[in-house]
Image (cartoon, rainbow, N blue to C red):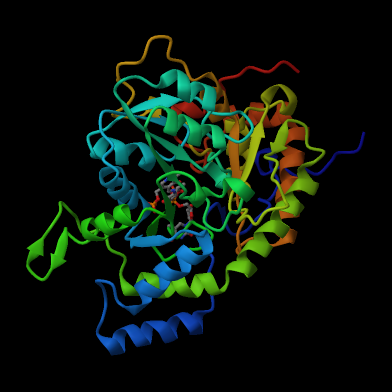
Length: 418
Ligand code: T4K
């Protein structure tokens, strides 16, 4: 027998990548264009409080999302809180558990109780049947999440909100620039909130925006985002400081100029992943509709341990030694995080799809920082790890490398027979 050279770092090979690959490396737009804007900001002395760049950014975001009004915010979490309060949500609001914790924290910080609802196994967005089953006399609204840029704004959800007279808010943090035909995020619901955090396809360092077609709501939110001020010394509403600043808007506008380039790069990255992962058993790439404009900002895979021979956590651990930081967003689900884990559950309350998906999701790096060549190498790495699953699995449990994720939950939960 000939001895094969190891090609998996955990089994003794050199790591596949010299530099660490991350999910969420910021896309950098044209530096000169950005610096020109920053110089304008500095020269003008207008740094915040609705300067010209924030106004221009709001106009551009409204235009791109097809909404009548846009209110830029310092981040999406504050944007969600403002929208929740501005819409008058109270009592219970139905929300998925499979989302970034900010969605749920925003409700709780506004004194609203989240009622967790299960998700669709394909889109990872709210399961509409579960939504209807969760509505009670305490329910005042639905907070849907367009997770990974998939739209949950379908007609049935809209009809449900109408039927039960519920407010309908969308956390669209992931979906800026995603057009999904008649289900376009901002076209349905009372308001939607985008994130322009550094890890998003279009970013403003930190930032967010609330879009709505409701004039009255927009006017209220404009007061609320700036302490409730209606004039120099007139406070007309409860409010906070949720404003975007001019430096962020300068980055946001410069990012928007590169939007097509970023989207095209991500689309090409997605296609490379799709081809390179097609034959890897047990590692499935989330399908995407390619006939709509989409930011392709999340490369979402699901790991089936019965086919891959490894759990998602084992695969992520093996990748860490290759200097690849794949992520298991949004494990373990908000309903198992504090302060929600102890919330009095509804009768018969279970989230089987959420819990199963939370065990399987692995998000891989994309964006301008990733080339097609690197993606192919990364996928070859995944294929090698899966091919040698039993040896890799044994090595993980012996390995004391500090790069392995530290928490105990990373131990294999699912036993696989080979
Ligand atoms: N709703 C949903 C559904 C969301 O996903 C989010 C945010 C929100 C609401 C709230 O939006 P914001 O209030 O943030 O606007 C990130 C982001 O902090 C967060 O914005 C995002 N969702 C969430 C999904 O992911 P982490 O835990 O991934 O952050 P971190 O620090 O681990 O960054 C990821 C990787 O990106 C790092 O390993 C390195 C790289 N990175 C990151 C930053 C910030 C860089 O290379 N440079 C950077 O500046 O949370």
